[in-house]
Image (cartoon, rainbow, N blue to C red):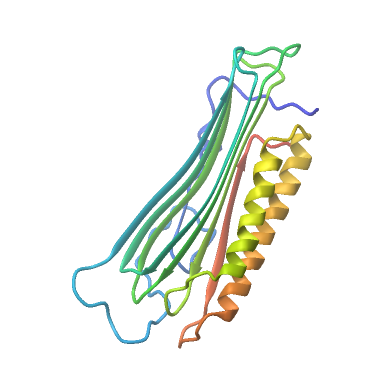
Length: 228
């Protein structure tokens, strides 16, 4: 089993947030007001609609509980909104174990968000952090996967796509609680994320078309994983 060692106090470089505008995926530190996909029927009527969601997975392993492995798989279908603030976060901590009696802490969070509307302001944050505290030879792994879907009209996932995503969720549960080496776990988690992306792309292809182009953006952040 491969191991991961980190200093007692984590570097700021291990805590990186990705804040993106709807069409600026992958650019850190950006929060902008941008036109979302054009929706039929004109601007929103009445009070502005604002959507807020936060998903957070935290795992902690120590001498009393040598293994803790947790995951989350959430689907947020906001529909037509004027603004949305979404956050996806995974944190893993290993503390006080030794090389002869090591710990394993795994946290994985998958978040799916769908939005639609004119001139939508989107703040999307996706981050992960893995920390070893006096834990020689411990495996401490955190992974955050965020999928932002933008369509001209509100997208509702049908039963077939939901079944596919539920199957991915079941396999994510099994993977998180497996004892496979960290490098293989990372490879399989990436493969599951690719499946989610494929399902969403297929769902978008079946959605009603508008003047603007549909968009599916995946954000991925891993910390504590060897061989990244």
